[in-house]
Length: 163
Image (cartoon, rainbow, N blue to C red; front, top):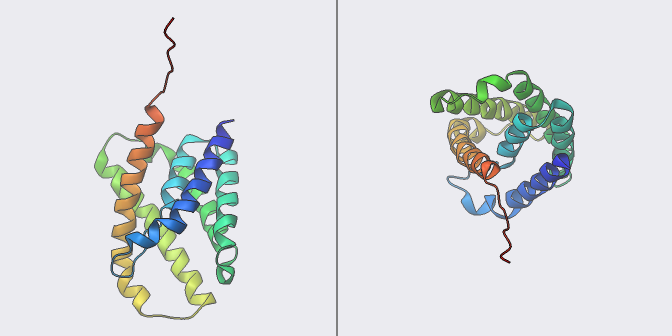
């Protein structure tokens, strides 16, 4: 049941990526909201469940861009493996270490995706100039979204009936 809940949350993030992220473009940089979901899932589920969710969400994103078919799926699986291996470092209470870890995860994603785009599409020098800004922009969004996800996870809704 927990896996189904996280999978539905993943499709919600894909939906938000398609509809909300284009409205948040700054300097041609679109935030990638799904990384927050991958981090959240890898922290809260075991490796098999989180990698299964990452695979399904990666395939869903890959179907939207046929030129990069399979790239999100592979990168999400690698991110899930990396986060699962170093899960203890991300859960620390120190905000600085959490921010550095999230920035490293975003850097890992960015380097792999730019490499794939270089191979598949073509070389565009603007990618190298915008990469540091994209890293900072996506890291800030990831920290904000992860904070909201962890806060919402700790909330419990109870319904009391009055007799």
